[in-house]
Amino acid sequence: MSAHQYDEGHTVAGWTGFGIAAVGSAVAGLGVCLVSAPLIAGGLAVTAVSVLVTWALHLTGWGKPPGRRPRAEWGMRVRDSGARQGHPGCVGCRLAGRGAGGSGSTAVEAMSATALPGRTAPDPAAPGTAAPETAVPGTAVPGTAVQGEPVPAESQG
Image (cartoon, rainbow, N blue to C red; front, side):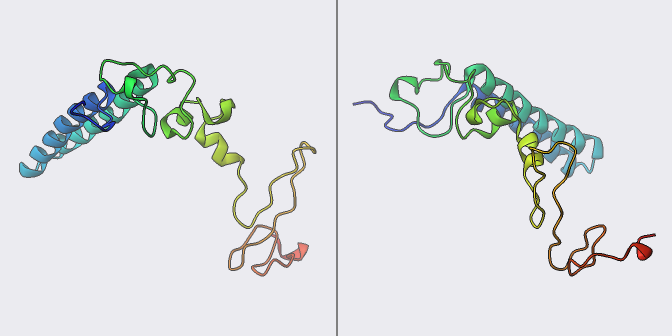
């Protein structure tokens, strides 16, 4: 029986990101102690770089998918074979345009295609035409009163 019974998620991406973030946090902490804005900013920048490095390593297969991996893939030297296609339910893969049904759309595109609460989405069958907007109680939509009543044409400047 092995000493490790759980997939603890130790990956090259995880440990590299942790190491860079630890250095960035230490630099930012030193900046706080010395009251040095450049050190604080530098530490925060290094910490932000750690996120990008971890994400890049995850996308190249040195990370792990969300959830448990098969026991054969628990080692740190094992690359993730599914990284190129994207992992289902992985935010990092979706931001890179991978996974999420294989549509290739990013999270920002998916959010912009979603209708806002209180508004109806435009009809995709009629290009160039927008569906009528409905007002959310307590908010004003251009061309309507707060209660959703149309504003007379004379009062629309």
